[in-house]
Length: 112
Length: 514
Image (cartoon, rainbow over all chains, first blue to last red; front, side, top):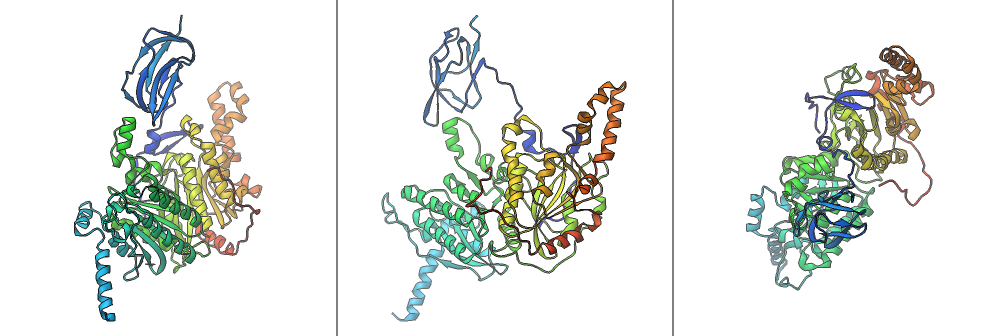
């Protein structure tokens, strides 16, 4: 049984509702993901995988529902479609790329 | 042949099998800094208490060149023995025999000893050191895993189940430990993951080492899969002995009572909590001041340290402690802390161990990550576990008890048998600053000096409501006590709860928010 091993730690201010407490942070808390509002003009990978087909090129005007690319992950070919009608501003991936989750694969701009 | 000759032949036969994978493989095991399966069992159990069964079981697969292979004991040692005199069933996978890989007969040896443990109502300890499924045995290996999981589930809440990870434990193999009550890991030796670094790199292109993916520290600190973390195998085996001495053999018994002892902690219990409510302290000091010989076996020490759980003894009897830890994240409840406490409460309840809750918490952890991680459903597990538990449940409010956290930490409303509060306790719907801002919003906004008015109103609120007497006036707190009275009162509460008889409506089982 661990007995009486108390260390003096480094304390930080930590706000819970209206009061700030002196305490230590955990590694997990320090590494937590900070929330970023999603940008609809960025097409991100929802799963890590490999780009096996790209059906558009920069400057194309693409209609809602048309295929953009195929992201293969877990032996499944996922067809990524255009979420709304817009122009392709930039393509950040090429065929054969292995990409992690949340990679911005394609950037869009409004059609006008 | 005479009997004497037969005996000699038996000894010879046993000696060969007991060598496992042979001298070369044993040397390799030692080079990895690992004990052999047999050494582990013999070190853990009382001297001369181990008795092995199914030593001569052979593997079944005859394809893929397996027909002429001899696998000693099919790669697993099973048997019975004692730890500090307490009977237990045990199995240990032998990495020196084909990497400890699991075939059908290997699994059947394990399920046989598990069945035995369940029938005899003794704890079952599994030492895992295996490369995984023996691919040559095909779905026979999968069947084997499934049969083990089924028995883990059947035995859950009936006998304590302990898993010791002393080598690789990957793929389906990890789910047996996950179903058991306590998982022990050792730095640099234990590796647990569903899909290993190779697969992750091939499929996803993410490079990570085995240690960073599923090493001992990761499971002790990040995932919470491990309950006890040791720096060496010997330390780990000592931890197991200590745990086994503290918990009952089955759900039909109580933990073995030992000679009562007084706490030995030198610090006065009155001097542990700082006067300033914003300053932290280590709640384990309060536990040390309460338990026999000031001993406390902490469970999941590194994971979600904002809540402390573990076992100690009071007057020789085992008690489970659940305590908020102001030293980490101000002692808030969050997803991990709720999961950690809820599972522990359910273990204590299943095995007749009274629960003492020490409360000092400011509320739930605010944050998008928490909300999106499902703090609602995770937090609910704690409410469920406390409400469901029928063992004696005693709470001591040391300092802060605000809002939803007050309800969650074994409040009277969830069925606490005894509710005590120290005189400095603040039991309120929320912290004074927050409450004053809402209740006196108009007065504060209309005042010439808003800050001065806010300060005044906060002070008013603290004086009127941030104390234990409002809750005591309603009977939600049974007694406001002096810190020095705490151990005596807890002992008394446990004494008068000995024959507690609490019933729950008939059900097949509840549906907790898993």
